[in-house]
Image (cartoon, rainbow, N blue to C red; front, top):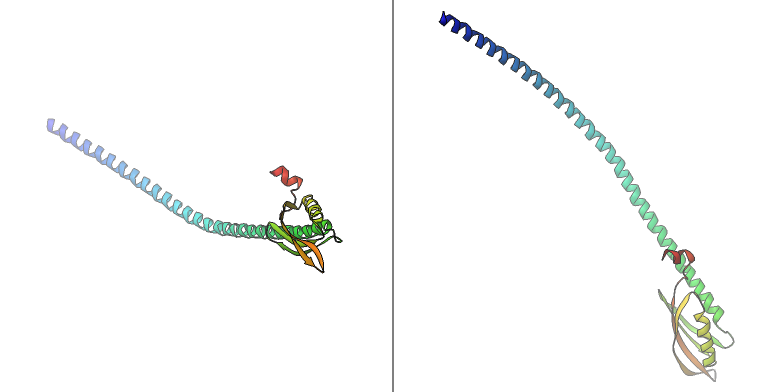
Length: 182
């Protein structure tokens, strides 16, 4: 009887172990099926997101292209504005020089303008005329650092005249907006 009990108990344990093993296998199969479907779903999502990324990259490339074009246009506008200011500067400088020159007492023989400087050469009746001319040029808002380079006595048309050279810096006057920004 004791053996029978042991056999019955062994059969129960085997049946119980088999049942636990069967349930474990079923859970593992169900988990594996769920994981495989999840992997499949995620792979499909990756494919869709990759396609979306490619589509969005086209848009980003287009935006980048337009940003570069905009920057180029802004640079070109800046260059045009700079050139306009420079051309205005030359016109104003020539106007200032013409207004300051006493035509009955002096004349200019040479005018050379570089980026930020101007050199004038001319003839005058006397030193006082040259001094008054320097004072008039110093009043200009377009000319700065007006300095006399030198004067020499020169015969011209049978008369003793003063040949002179002077130099100055040139710049557009600072506007109120520019002054407030500084």
